[in-house]
Image (cartoon, rainbow, N blue to C red; front, side, top):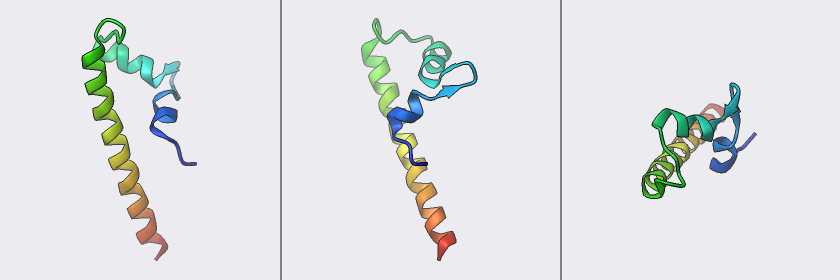
Length: 64
């Protein structure tokens, strides 16, 4: 199942949404700390996309 970054971020992990865990782990409140949240969110999105692209390459090489 292909997920977008938004789907991944909003996914339930354990007993809460992944996004909520990120807020708690980083002690961020995006309403009060918008610039830090934008930077961290962009970093997470880039890391997600890099991992997704890498997985696609690995799967395509297995199929050949």
